[in-house]
Length: 298
Length: 310
View 1 (cartoon, helix red, strand yellow):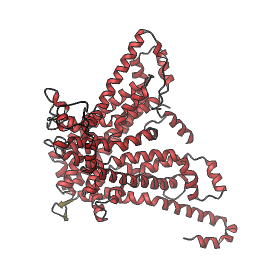
View 2 (cartoon, chains in turn yellow, blue):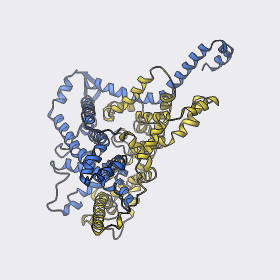
View 3 (tube, chains in turn blue, green):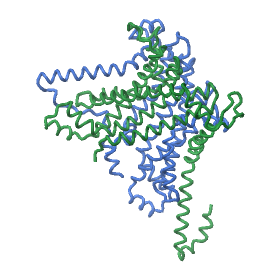
View 4 (cartoon, one colour):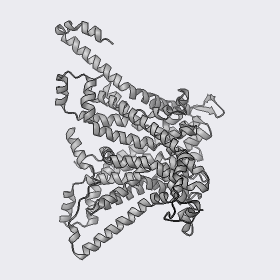
């Protein structure tokens, strides 16, 4: 398993390191081809970035300037950001999103690690059946469970609370599967050596298995963060109190305010993106690795 | 637990090793179950129980004004809901939406990935740009496009005649598809780039030596080898398309004239606005069945056409 892990790493695109070509010093025809390629890439880059650019620009314009379709902020109105933060309650929404996301990421890492350890290192009756049961959770769309979950959350008394936002997502079949694969890659000699040193299962888990599975755990954490930060339907259903709204739901609230404060809505969208942008800049490789693990099989 | 008891029995272990082995096995199984409990409880309460409960709900008709008053109606509700025009319209809207977003999303992602796969100076900048929409969520993308589509102040009003986007029954779904394709472009690009990276350069170079042009190389070498990645993207993309909700809620709330009333939005309105969990449960079961069938069909038929490198 450890060899396939290595092969997998080799498949991860090096998004950050370009390979420089020597073809630039070719005949004139090639030069024009090169110019054409760059021109095409530039045009596409502008198209992809345009919605982001216009959002940032509009967040710094007033409504008259937006209506005049100004494409550059000559006198940027930075106050939209503080308005979004305080009057638009975006500070509260962002805090709520962070708390919910942190609970889910930590919860998923813990539950998935424990379960994956059992599936990878222990023998017990019904092991295969239970593993299939864990994987079966991936087949049931979340939309199918919300009707009853809403009732359950009300019955448990955790409606309108962080617990209600996070608890249904504290476990993940996908994560358990991913970490089991990583644990199966732990070399047999290490297990034998740990057994000779008198390591019990829990010590082996904490001192050997978890440190070795760290890259996979990082990938899982990035995934869980992305998924829970971007959740919309469940936070919308399970909170009524505006003080518990998450940033994604809060954006709709911001959008509903009057035309005059469109710029504040855009500032809100920019603020909602910043944490994810930072996360992705830091953990791009983990994300790509996690994605390719499922997609590309040699 | 029983550790103290076992410690006192230790001398006996030497004479009866079989017993110890059995006990160790028992202890190992016990530990395994303890480790599985946290995830197991969450799955049981929030996935399996509601999944099964859904069938029970679907067989009952609930009084919107008093949820405690529910009446067993058997499969009658299935017939009523699934035979209704509203359901067919909603299903058709969902299918249309998937057909609009999945192929285009993958095609654009692939196109950008192929372009960014070239060995050019500064290509890393373009790769970062093309994957940048991963940082946005559907809610953020919806808000970003909301003004662009606004007929009074949006940029598109400068095009004449102004495309009647969100307020027009014929255009609203297309507008939402555009938002969705843009938002998922980054993910699609990353996936396709990863797939391209996995193709050995020697294979493409060998085809070049054999005199194959760029299009022929792409058609006969790259595309077949990329098919597993594309297959994965089609399956996952379709499932995502059937779960679309946020951009609909923010941009159109199912309208105009219910032309963007996809299945998930239909479920949501039955649950929260109509307060009819029985009907919502029938719809949810339909959604589950459709997702399951789609996944199985795709696995069966698409996988046969997929070329796996061995």
